[in-house]
Image (cartoon, rainbow, N blue to C red; front, side, top):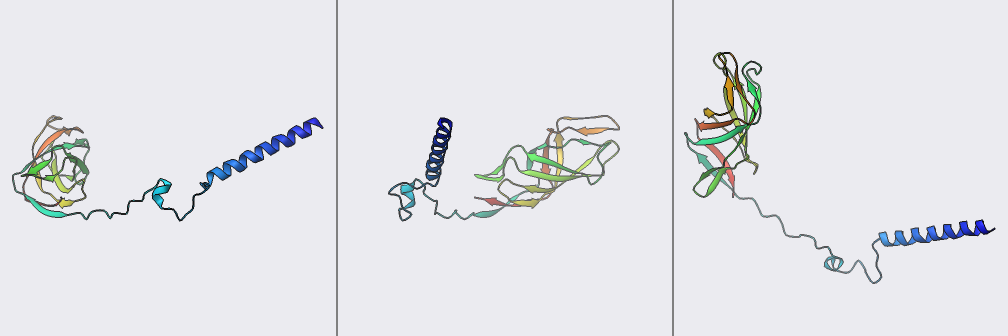
Length: 175
């Protein structure tokens, strides 16, 4: 008999606890109604619209230098014509007070035909962190981190390169 009463008490305690927990989870508090302003409940929604993005056109002239870092390893023995590679702008390109090409912009390119033991790198597109995209034509003026022999030219990932624009770069700049 005593064990039955103990079991019933335990059951009632568990039931009462579940009731209190469930009541607390509903978020209802005495005196709180849905007609109260949201700020009195501790939540204030952001009702301001996002500011409109303002874009302007910018042009970098032929001969502009860009410092970039190669993100992929390239090897004249294993890479083929048309293989894609990615580089990243290491230093922002600034004209006056305007950052035209932010650091971190991505350059997409393809491996082209080169002389024996070398590769031609064709840069095709630049994508900025702000979302601007433009076609780009540039040549490699110098590279660090490259090793090679007469038959095997290699550019390691993280190699720094200096690119020089061979055509003007027309790109949208977010202000």
